[in-house]
Length: 94
Picture 1 (tube, one colour):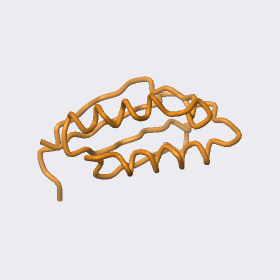
Picture 2 (cartoon, one colour):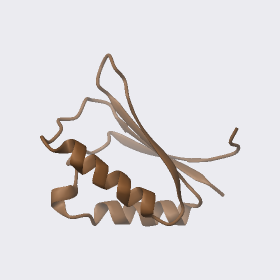
Picture 3 (cartoon, helix red, strand yellow):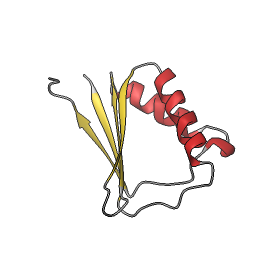
């Protein structure tokens, strides 16, 4: 059963000067994680709010991906935390 992880940042986060490098290292880590399908980073232009959606082959692969992200070196962490995280079961893709 495939699952989606939706991380919502209700307020525009303060980003590090080297955030693009940090974000790139995060994307590379996720792309290399077993069970990762795809991901999207979205921004609401008017407010700067962010949303991150990642799709996973299973709940177990999503949890392993989350652990890998938490265990990254501090210098690679973006230092931003979502306001909330939701998990969704994927019923269909089209």
